[in-house]
Amino acid sequence: MNEALDHFAARVATDPSFLSHALAEYARSASLDDPGLAAALGCPVTELAKLRLCGMPRSEPEHFRGDVATIAKRFGIDAVTLAGIVRRGQSLARLREARVAGEPGFLLAARDDAREPPPVEGADT
Amino acid sequence: MSNTWPAPADAAAIFQRLLAGGDPVAKSDFAVAFLDLLVAFLRATHPHEDDHALFTAAEDALLSVMNKPSVFDPTRGTDLAAFLRMAASADLKNLRDKEWRRRKHHEHRDCVELPDDDGNSSAEDATELASFDDPALAEVIAAFTEAERIVFELMRTGERRTEVFAAALGLGNEPLESQERHIKRLKDRIKQRLKRAGGKA
Image (cartoon, helix red, strand yellow):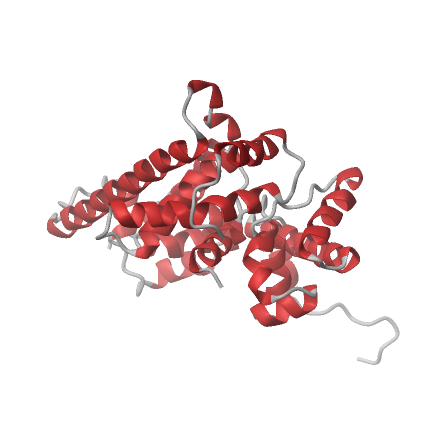
């Protein structure tokens, strides 16, 4: 473990230009601590900070696969596994950002509907 | 990780990878090559600073190059390590200055009693003086959107740093001007609503 690298990796967890961002979202959604995340990725926990400090794979299909492959090769992890985790983390991050930005639908969906429900067709009243 | 600064040729190679873009491991390699050395340098030159400040200043210096590699111009005759040491020292000074200003601001605010001006006080003052027991205020707060709630909670803690608001709102990747505009709009909206609801209290 390296305290300075860990500190840096934690700091950039809110920066979408770092892989840390997607990994943090994924770990949060799956309730994983660092050993759990390392196990999911298939890498030693001691490599997590360096992995988190990688750039986020570019989202364009022609770049995404290559970027993931480059990272996976460097850290000796399975590219398909990494791609799945990154995709899920990115999706979760986008949902969170949309919710924070107050896009219609997200908050409404979470609220109970206080209106009287419409009568069910054909039901006895 | 090495205890010695990378040779100029090695540092130049990492820098070229950052500059060229498209290498997702370049940032990590750059951090691994320089972070510990920068922290050790700052610790030696500023022995009384706490680790958090040292880490933050070293990270700020690295991020400035990661985010905009062109800030370092190798043709000017300075090597990358020297540039980063200068940048980190300046960032540490900026952190200290910012903290000093924040403390002075809080001391000043704690000492000043704002006059009653028949509702003409600024929106910011209204927020700072708000009494949250008031049902009208509670109603306004309950109606906040998620983004407004996040900004409101940060405002209540006295937070003023744009980067903290931006991170909490998921705006970290937007240009600074856009972050500031977005945050200001939310703050103004919150302040106006609180003020209308009697937030001057």
